[in-house]
Amino acid sequence: MIKHQIKSYLENAKQVFSIKFISVLIISFPSAIIAQYFNIPLAWFLGPMIITSIAALSGLKIIMPKIVLSFILIILGLHIGNYIDQNLFNQMLDWIWTSLIMLIYIIICILVVAKYLQKFASYGEKASIFSAAPGALGPLMILAENEKTDLSQVATSHLIRLIIIITVIPFIIVNNTDNNVLLNDEFNYLAQNHLNLILLIIASLFFIFVFDKIRIPAALLSGTLFASGLLQITDIASYKLPDETVNFCLLILGSSVGCRFAEKTVKEIANNSLHSIVATTILVVLGLVAAYVATFVVDTNILTLILSFSPGGIYEVAVIAIAFDLEPDFVAFHHIIRLLFILYIVPIILRFLERTKIKN
Image (cartoon, rainbow, N blue to C red; front, side, top):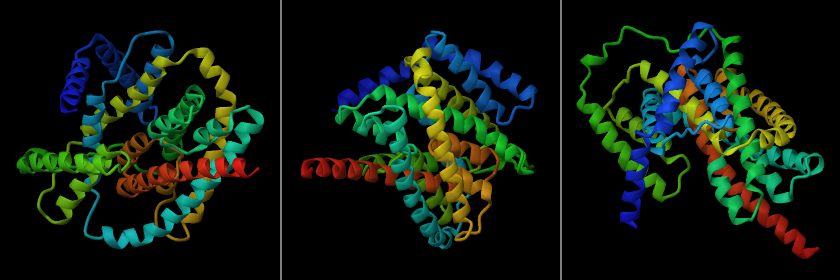
C-alpha cells in the first residue's frame, strides 16, 4: 500500500516537468496579464480559465498535476487561517443557523433540479440526483460509478455549472462592493519569524493526514485551515503570506478548471449545455434566496452569504473570497459543511428511492 502511494506520488511529481503542464503555464500567464490589462474582474483566474478551456476543447494536450493543486490548497488554507481569531467560537454559534439553512437549501436543490432534469432533459433518476447536487463532484463521481450512473452526464453538468458560477460571481462582486482585489498594505513580510511558516506547514500536513483518514471533505483545505486557525488562536504561530501568492493560486485554480475539459468533446458540452444552464439558474436563484434568509440570523455582508451559498466550487469560491476580502473563514466553513451535507444526503435519497420501488 505504502509502495503504491510512493509510486503514485513520484509519477505525479514527474507531471510538473511534463510538456503538458508547461504548456498550461505558457498560455496561462499571458492570458492573465491580458485580462488584467482589460480590467476583467479576477483577471488571474478568468484569463487562465478561458484560455485553457479553449485549448483543451481544441485538442491541446494539457494537464494540471495533483501535486501542484495540493500545494495551492495548502497556501489557500494558510491565507484563510489568518482571518481566524479568538471570536471564532462565538461566531460559530451563529453559524449553526446558517448551516441549518444550508441543509434545507441542499435538500430543496436536489429535489427541484433532479425533477427538472428527469422531466425535460431525460436524465435517469440517479443521474439527475447526482447532477442536481450543488457541488461535491469528486466524491459524487465515485458514488455515481458505484451506482452504475451515466458519469458523462454528471461530470459535464457540474463542470458547466462551475464555469458559469465562477465567471459570473466576480462581476457581481465588482459591481456591488468597493473592495479592491488584493489590497496590499505596508506589511513587512520579511520581518516575520519564518520558523512559524515551517511549524504551520508541519501542523497542516499532520491534520491533512488525520482529516483524510476520518473522511472529512476537502482535507487539503480543511486540514490546513484547521491547523492554521488552531495555531493562531493559541498564539503558538502565525504567518502572513504575501498577497502576490493569491494571484498564483488564482492562476492555477483557473487553469485547473480549464484542464477538466481535456476529456470532453465540444459535442458532449453542447448536448448538456442548455439544461445545465437552466439547472444552474435554478440553483443560483435558490442560493440567493437562502443567502437572503440567512441575513435574518447572522450579521454578515450579503456578498459573503452569496459566495457561501453558491452551488459548487469550494476551492474557487474560497480564493475569490480571499481576493475580495469577503470573510474567507465564513465562506470556507459553509462550503465544507455543504460538502458534508451532500455526501450524507445523496446516499439517503438514493436508498429512500430504492425502498420506495421495492414497496411498489
